[in-house]
Image 1 (spheres, rainbow, N blue to C red):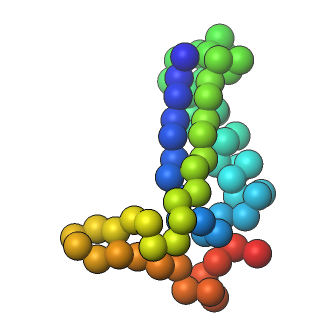
Image 2 (cartoon, rainbow, N blue to C red; image 1 turned 90 degrees about the vertical axis):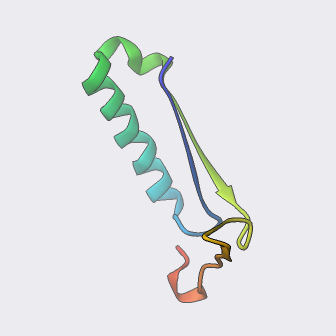
Length: 69
């Protein structure tokens, strides 16, 4: 079963953007493995609480003007 797990900052994507990510990821797996994988493809979009992630010892937060509506 193909499986994709995206972790994104909370509020960074709208519901429509998350839906689009699911559709595009499913299409990618179908392109790679064939139509037979479509019913078994799992895409999980997890929202990480703001400030709960970082890189290079810097904790990130999303500015209000960058949040999805």
